Length: 153
Image 1 (tube, helix red, strand yellow):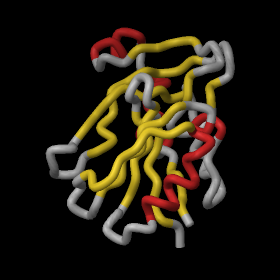
Image 2 (cartoon, rainbow, N blue to C red):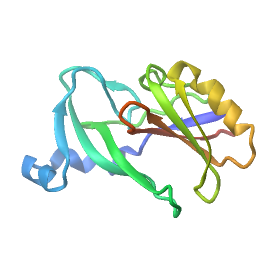
Image 3 (cartoon, rainbow, N blue to C red):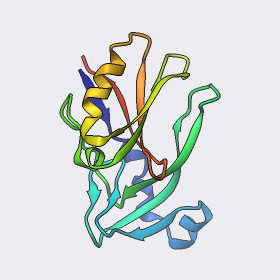
Image 4 (cartoon, rainbow, N blue to C red):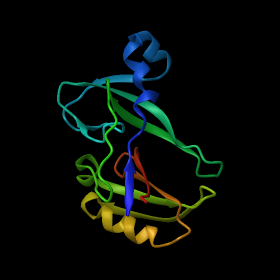
């Protein structure tokens, strides 16, 4: 069993109150969604016409050579949505993915590329290895972090 985790809304709630100049100082871009921007907090595609923030985010803070940060989209005013255990949100299942499995030392010990519709099976296969502690899912085409996956209890 697995659980896909959204990023915490509280980390991004302050963005709505920043001016365009303050956002620019932080290298945060504002876009208007065309319906294809995947929000990492709500784990949904942002509806057409809604405001989204494009910002750099450290999704892999572990002390290893795999420490990493990359661009992510967050809907203005996003609220966390946790998918049911063992389910994959549409914003992830409809895309080509890069899937990376990490051990407790934040080292990659397995990785693959998969169509989103095949993600649940790949997660189950990876978690069959007891040394895998967590999985990161990335959108393969642009390399952006999508979500973290853990074993559910």
